[in-house]
Length: 374
Image (tube, rainbow, N blue to C red; front, side, top):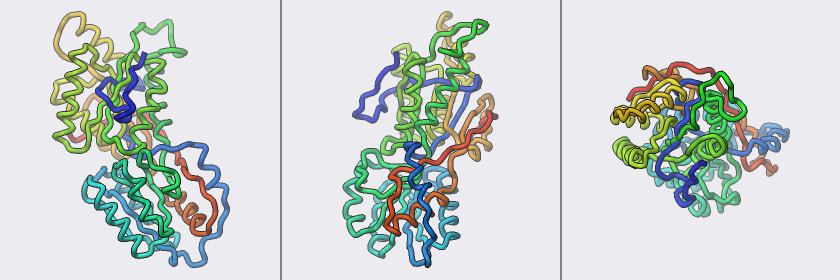
């Protein structure tokens, strides 16, 4: 039976989420927010003509640049390029820190300068609802891109565009179930193994991204895994290492070390690899291998542990991997939201209804060697 996490910390408690899908240790990096797949139809179905003078429409884009990794920087650059190609005037602010305050100041500045639309790729804060009130009260439209703050009231923003990370979390867990031939995938020729203990490693608490990836994993894990817990490592490298060590030691004391680790984004994946290396934990190529080796270790009383890794990952990032022995199964996350945003902005400015949340599909790709600079 899966352990349920306290809602007070957005289900991020200690640790225990391990499950490697594809008979290979996988690492996947997910850096976008998640949304309801059904919400895309309204925006897509609206047919609007481009504004007669699109340059008369000014967009203030408040982004994160490469603070959250290469993928975010690439996505923002491509999105801006596409919007400018469509004829819109785009002013861009790139955050240089993990503190959300500079972003809030940039939004206020853009609003005071009279932009028509604010595009926000937000830093992680649970206070966005109240902070947006004075910014949007003057009529400027607020559109979240790629991720959305947890708890923000729908009345405080005009639209949101992102990937469906809950669905991605579900697919990752289902791949582990298939690899271990659990449930309906049970095979008489397959050596029976107990259900794996799993640990979900996340790096953020203030956005829907990690929360939904965890929920998607738990949707499957609650039926097939021995445990589903979560560790939050944060952004600071030293603090992340300390947080992971604390969680790992608690699990070791309880005799509940995970067999499979699911990393919900690039940062979490990098932090996990570094922490496991420092702890002397071996990364193996599949959940089956991890469970068999750890069963032998436990029986013999030997020291050591083996884990398989599953991660939500961007193909461009995974292609650069150099970590020997780890195989990946990832997704190619959206790297350009301008097609959706061009339509949404045109409708918002025209006073037409738009879907509150729009889902953009992430393309899966085959497993491959994973590497990371630790």
